[in-house]
Image (cartoon, rainbow, N blue to C red; front, side, top):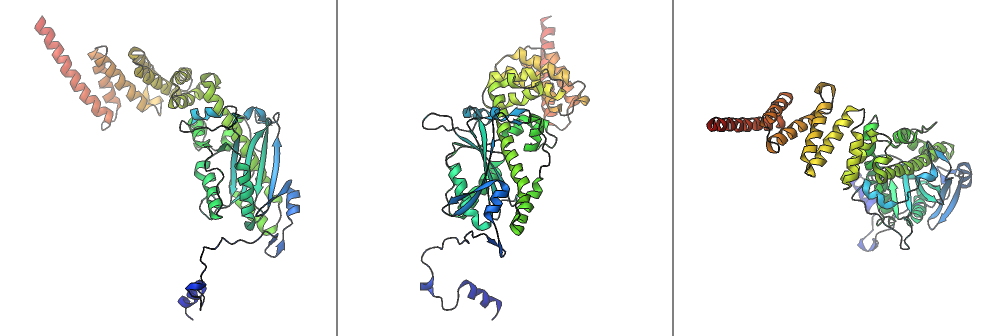
Length: 441
């Protein structure tokens, strides 16, 4: 039999006619979780005992859950766990204007669940399995963590069912990069097993994007990893933490050997991520609600002002910019002057705006010592030239600024082209004014 015939016999056995085919699609097949893997017996009770977990019963079989409770007076870096609780969920809309919070029918505070996954890979798709689903929520001031661990691939339905029961009672899901990774992975797994996703209608808040807006300038790699924010914001450094690239290998080792000990560092890594996510989210909310008074220093006030301005809190944003204007960092002061000038000009406080443009030119002089402020300096030169030409009528000052801008700008830049056009117009105005004076005399 050739290869083509062999493949046909596999897809459609000989003698199988149309009537022999099932009328409805077959249900996805899976092996029951009987504790056997590669002809070896997995002692689920022993794994639960080694990891400090309990076996939950679902309609799809058993699922291993590990519970840990962080009391309110426990320290996580420089903050206490009880201080990390989200008191006002509506403040999240200041960090992300498109976010809409949800409340309970009885008027009580929404129940926020923090979600973090450990998976068999980072590529996504149907082949990526979440072998550890970590959920954290506040309960009586303490932070309760429940982790669902996959003990075999055949037990995935039981894990998804148990996680769905916990998440079904959530009014808010908080993740870190969950919009791109965590939620799509979970939704894919539920869809793969033909199970409904429990948070289709639950608001989701991804803390990664507000974190980048608030603290991107403070991190070395620019990626705003959660472990980096722990060090910067919470003064916390993990000891003996497992590297992320090792985590899938430890799970595969557990599948091969049934030895649960390599998974304990993975569980601790996931728990610390959940507590840190709650702490970072709480810190961001305090900055958004407190504004300039909640900022630790002038450097932090600048991104807080940007966030508040984006949310429409213009007065509080301006207060943050005024504090940032006193920063010892030149680039921070330069951007603060720029944003204060923009705010004053939009409020038609033109004289004040011109004062901020002059402050910006002063702090960036000479331009060679202030990297990253070239565009701001060019903007200030152009804005001041416009002010002197159209508002106070000082054509000579406007011409001098235009010449200065042309000399410091790139010859092919838009600013240089616009300033040459402005310079030609100013020369015509000055010539016309001079002719008018000669005529009068």
